[in-house]
Image 1: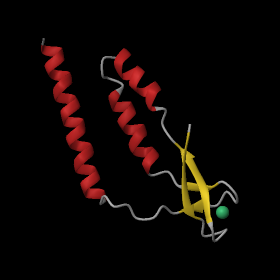
Image 2: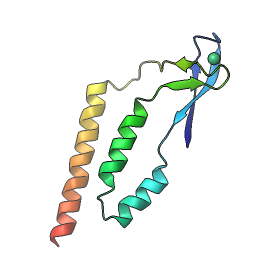
Image 3: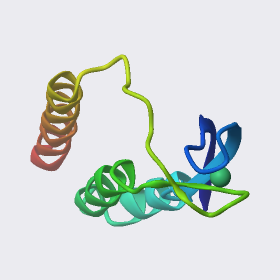
Image 4: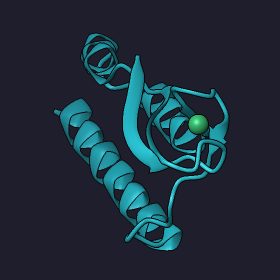
Length: 97
Ligand SMILES: [Zn+2]
C-alpha cells in the first residue's frame, strides 16, 4: 500500500502528490486478532519504520522532505509508549481471566 500527500517538491519546485509505502492496517489488525495480540509488536515496528520512510515525488521520483509536523517527536514517542503500555495492560488482563 502507498500513502499519498501533497508536499512542495524541491526538484519540481511546485506542490506535487508524493507517496511512500504504508502498512496495511486492516491486515495487521486481523493478524493481531488471529495471534491474540502477539502480532501487535510486528505492527508497531512496521508502523514506526514506515513513519521514517522518505516521501517520493510522483512526477520526478525525487525524495521530498516532509514539512515539520505540529506534534514534536518526543510527544509522539510518549503517546506511542502510552498506547503500547495500554495495549499490553489490556492483553495481560485478558490473559489472566
Ligand atoms: Zn518532483
